[in-house]
Image (cartoon, rainbow, N blue to C red):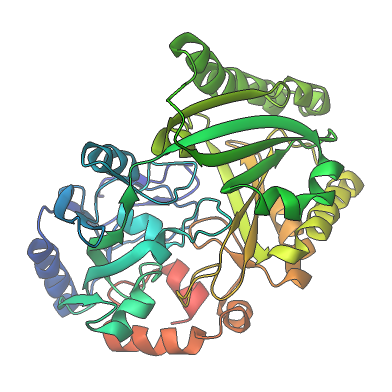
Length: 431
């Protein structure tokens, strides 16, 4: 029996035929060609941060960590080509050394570039898209082992769909990203009553470059985060205070609270008051240090994108469902926003979107709660994050994406024998 692989959350496992590492696209292409000739499967696990079985396979698992780092910098056009196995955490440091930055990022930076774009990973930003919307080109190894170089001007049909391909079209080996000059953000973290947030949500979103909030279940409070570009001098959190607030309170202390709640669920409503949901703070730092934070507490997550105008009522519906069914939740509910984009399987395709993310602490039962959240959101045109837990299949997903059928035809073209398929892609796209 081969070596067992599991994802970051520990809810998905695989025993592949092999786990191999490559450092060049041609090496990956050869592995795919051989697997295709034998009728075997191939998957790229990235950093394993997907909560879905997107990377699970009983075929060959190929690590592309070696296809990493900056390959080319085009300063005139603000384009940077990077190996797709580069983690966002590493990329941020490499870009900063070049005086550059990503225009927007999510709040976790463990993912590889390929994994992040392929699953429609995003941050929050009034006028900004998710990561796939920042791509200008990519290189893809298809299901027969053929290598395709594509961009907005070359092989545009492949480029259009491969930006968010959920691993079903092939394996991305390089990405060309539209970047910006390095910049600083002023972060303002302020607790507000949830009702006040929802009543003023348009103003809060439209008056900030990046706005998000975390509602603390079993309380009336939300922690709001406003991040805005600034030319003011850096004023980061002092090292000790920063470690206490970002690492100790948001990870070690929060993790301890979660462990108590897992052992004694009836205490969770009282423990909610111990979450970092009170007190205001303001600081200025490099953008990538503001966007992403350490996440040492493991959890399971579901996230759905809905048209932004539905957010207040949808969140109130979830709140009422939690109270009605008596769920005991020790994780905040996170809400973020993005601009529309032109990526066919992006969760924000052609619509301004609000994202509602719910979490359950690792080791606790989550399926009944997640299914109830999914059911509540059903009337709000929800598009699930491709890398986070959901229960939708191809029949439910197809009406949510105007170009879903075109994507399936591209899949037939690039992976006709389903070398890159697994039970997840068969569920969400069909066989």
